[in-house]
Image 1 (cartoon, helix red, strand yellow):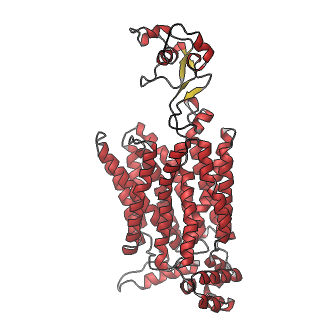
Image 2 (tube, one colour):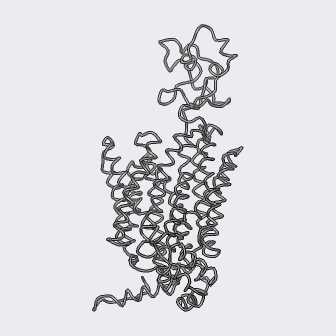
Image 3 (cartoon, one colour):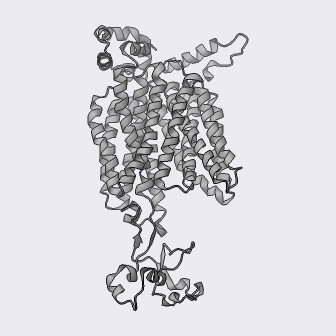
Length: 553
């Protein structure tokens, strides 16, 4: 594992790492707005059927007497389930008899109504335009709105599958640069989509690139940072998502038109694309894959930026070959994705880490949907989700350095699950307590996300790291897609969805205890490094402790 020593020589926490952190985390903040945007751009405004008496000036001129809009609404729109004007039906003909103070529901029948054949009129007091109002995603078409979100999440899932392997083959920085361009172009195109299917297509392409940005940002930060500063770098990366939640609320509060909002959150990625050509490729990946000349240039550049000019002058190809001879010989063998499951020492790590990713995605979306019933306005709710994440992730940084990766991962998932399970015992009328438990559970999930992002990168070797991270991202997005479906269990029992949402992270947290501790270890570069770690752990056990099979770790 000589690269860790090389990194310490050129600087594993210096000016270069600070500049890299800023350059990589700022896009993460804006990326979060893409993922959360449809909370606002797809908001469902109050609506009713278009009716001539209210919305056609010529028809209004023929109205007898001086009737105010409320009276015209009464004779044109039947009352809905909540006694408010019905959102999906209208009277075929004005029901003048309903103006009689003694009129009751018996004065009209369902046969006298019809669907909104002439379209809808939307309340534009909160949002001037949303995709729901533009394409009439209401009434019989209301299922198209959640379909758009599912398509977006599916894009992240597919992107994670593609870009994990692509980054291991073509490099982290190149794939990241192309992802920035794809997000900028597809996001901008979505703002001008003429029809709903085209909008969904461009949103899918945005999400496809989002997966690549998240994975490559995480990996570049990890592979360019020294062991002692790795947790700090990954925590700051995770905090980018929290600040992005708050930024989303601020931008959406100022921009109330969906198309303009789509442009505002997409345009910054053109700038990211331009400056990303400055970013350094992972020297660790370059050396392990045999690209020694490029790896040497990147290391020399980092040494110069960090003020280690003497080290820069002593770095040569011969020095690299001598220092990393073992890793270079092992790294030349092609590592296929199947090695994650078939290689002794990696199978258990793959299964448990993937389960932790799934639990995060599955439970987060279930809990977020439950938070939306708190009654807060949508802007305040968005800020709340981001704000509660910040102290949780900062606290995680302290726990990772004091307790280690394994206990922090297990505790964060178990805590989140227990908070949700406790809510099954709290009466519905104790809204404040239920809200507090939900927010506490969300904090636990924020901590779990920070930890699993760090832990996954440390568990797997450089030759398979992006593939493993991609597999984890796929699991998280699969959980995000399945999570909302669990709410359908509420038809069989009010507490059933919460029981499922709570049980999954608890079981995943307990499974995390099977993973090895990686906090004080350098990043493994090859599969042999991982197996060597297992052997060292087995040989350092207390006397008398039976070692069944070291490769199980």
